[in-house]
Image (cartoon, rainbow, N blue to C red):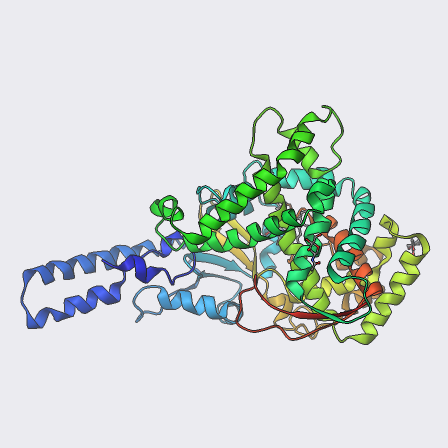
Length: 517
Ligand code: HEM
Ligand SMILES: *[C@@H]1O[C@H](CO)[C@@H](O)[C@H](O)[C@H]1NC(C)=O
Ligand SMILES: CC(=O)N[C@H]1CO[C@H](CO)[C@@H](O)[C@@H]1O
């Protein structure tokens, strides 16, 4: 049978692999011309397969919630998957309106329990609903070349510990490195010339953020100012996600085998090998450094924490880059696009920077006092979250929500983020960008309520960083990083962004940035 070829167009996870029934049934229909008993057997086999396959998509639904999957007349879940893939935000929003705050939706390969933001508080401290478990099966494919992916979803949660203990605890100490590296990275990439230049926005941002973030992780010029490192690390991150995605369209048992022939996986393996080679001298230096030294960078922390356990430090380092490069670059790229052409807002931001940072340079207090900038960042994030479905969780055991909804063990769930930007149910003129929105809300609220409008504060209304004890661990670091970069860009350059080219993937989206020094 040829379902292996047929299936490669399907995106999503391993259980997408299903027999192609359209072929099977059309063969069975030839029956009337030729009474060969082989066709009857084939027909029965097709029916049995069909039965097993329909069964496999069934779900436990003890609370009898609405189930939105295939329509009764549809064969299989292909159409349901396509509806989700081509129009998820609209589909989710429509379902919320039609079926209420909790329902099952067939996404790209499975049923997920979708909850409205009203449940965000109810689940935020519930560790029986695990973020790691939910992303593990998507990230850990066990194939050589993807080790950093597995580390990203590691049960040890070393990423969270590392970010909290090193980056968040000593946030003040990353300010100066970010500031000086910003200066260098912008000079290298955008030059000091007065002439206007054009760049692909996302591409140039990857390079600039790659260098600045690497400085705070390595603090070693042979790495963070090495063009090879910037190129290899950013390429590996982008390509390996696409490669993993492509591999998932094959049946799980043969991933390892397919990987050996899959061009993108082979490419990704070569990249990882080159990265190991490139980091060797740096790691040797770390080994030679005195033991018991206090860890100043996340990588020193890793090295100390896992000493003597011969772990794959390189994969761990890449996994740290994976959680930060892409999200950070995405945030700055959206900010530059959102600011483009808003002359009054840019003028006010520049005035704020000169007023606040002009006094005492970059300090914790001056960064906190950039309140208009904080508002613009939160507004941009509100309109461009990573996804329309956030707070992914998987139930480690049966959980009952306060209103009685029973979530069976192993259920995958997500919280809808459509209320953040698709209507005005929570935010007035919710689909429009208003850089002053959170600035004004802060002015209007009393002291206690002010903090709820900070960029780093999560709430059911704003779940772009998640919400609760599994929320983004790097958001305090990201906030400093983005503020310092924006200060440099706003003070040094004029910019305008042309409309993004349609139809490309999020990773490869193209925007043009015009810069005048
Ligand atoms: C503005 C950029 C960023 C955005 C929008 C973002 C967003 C997120 C989101 C949505 C989650 C999942 C939370 C959940 O579903 O409940 C997450 C988790 C995480 N993020 Fe970020 N992130 C950003 C930047 C960063 C940076 C710069 C770092 C590292 C320095 C980082 C480290 C992490 C870690 C370690 C986790 C896993 C938390 C855990 O283990 O529970 N993030 N982030
Ligand atoms: C930040 O704001 C506080 C309160 O308005 C003020 O006391 C402090 O001097 C400001 N710091 C800077 C660096 O502007
Ligand atoms: C176009 C350009 O000059 N890009 C540079 C930006 O900075 C990175 C990191 O230092 C370099 O590798 C690029 O060559």
